[in-house]
Image (cartoon, rainbow, N blue to C red; front, side):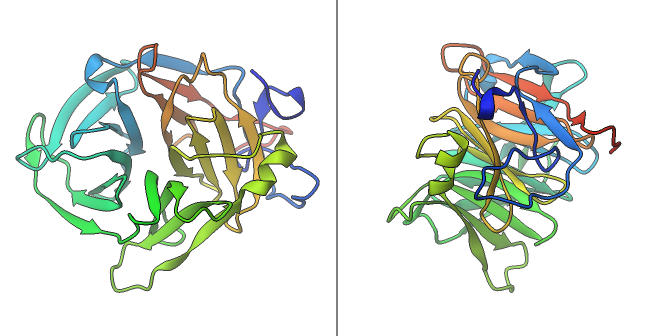
Length: 285
């Protein structure tokens, strides 16, 4: 796989960022991920061939959803398998689902049209009632990526494409409190990509907020991963191995900082790959 300056490690705000000349003064960092050396991987069963979003509960359980039906699957990390499943709505609501976030006991599932479904966890093979909110961004943003940000108490919604093209990656910020005013989106100029030898385009397929408050985004089509700060500055970037990550569609960070990447079936089995953060400079967590 190729990386910035030929290195195998992407050192991010959980690590030490690889910064182009135009992006100085990165956040102080002590941890990084080495994408040339995965820490674990397990294949997913056929019912998750089209795995999309990933998210952790407050008590450290990992959930995933598939692409077309509102079904949530609990991932058993220790056993490298899939446990219970439950459904969004008695009718198992259908849609082009592109992201998952969990806030306390509230689950959020978003469609590519910007329809946000809220529900609670249900027992195995049971249905959970839901409510749906149109975020009003579907005409300008093809949604593909969702995560919760505690600092802003808001959902971060990544756009795979925007209309009209702004020459930037757009991440909307939607406060959980509907009475709050919508926050300004984070705009990441794509012109920064060339400084990291990452070409000229990046179409997000997932987003996750790191414990340090930066954002990691992955692009399945371009096989790239970047980290950005809240000003829209790209602080690190890497090209992913197409063999290891045939179609990355989901991101999550576990309680211990481990990064989880979910890949949809694309000539290979759907899988989840783990990258444990490595200490840099001898510092602890």
